[in-house]
Length: 313
Image 1: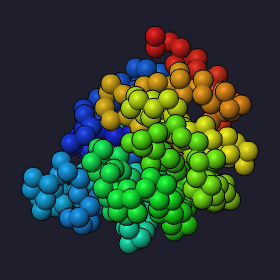
Image 2: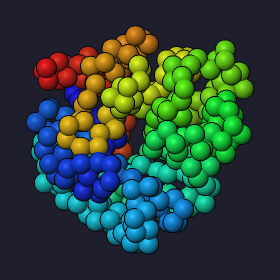
Image 3: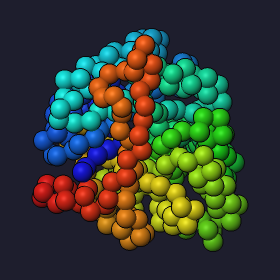
Image 4: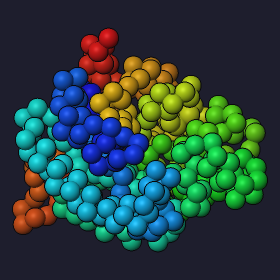
């Protein structure tokens, strides 16, 4: 069975995603996906947290975020019910953590009865985006102390604060900091022992509370040689007995399932035989008296995903 735990649409992520959410769901069904996690970006609550494409009219951009999130949850529930016989839709969101005050906002958003989970992602060092473009990444490095080593250390310290405060079930693109690095393939184990110590600390924390790392294939379409997380981190995660889930981090129809064959080969090379997803009980809808539904962890063999992916070519 094929699935993704991380996806976006142009309908609710305007600016850097494409397509209507329903069209994306229909495309996933046509590919043979049996589970799809919808995880639009969470709303932000400060002008300083807006992205460059939102700055033409900052006040209007900020004012639109919370109503858009509410509209997303309603549409996700509609699609969950409409396509329940064809695909198992999970409803979530992708978190942001530019500062510790986002802990309470994420907690509040995650408390909605319709929300099954959220992805604990870090897209910033301090409050500066690190994956938008090279100029923003350079600014983040400068603010962290002027070296990439310092920037990586700051990133993993901020990630540790996120993990400690929120304990997300799914940790998004664990090593996103390497995307725009001068050397994304750098093995920090030998190059930067202090950074590696932080990586190991964070992985041990996620393992201690039973969280999952996503094997995120979007790194491959962005030109990296390996998915997130890279091999050194993935090997340490396997050593800890950690579980992987699977994500395309798609931002439109064209990216659904992109590079899954390569991601599966990567996982197999690590000795990983299965990935994990969630199953709602009941599905669709919310529980009795408007409560959250029960979530069951579901193990999926790599080969069963590969059986679906092999039919795409």
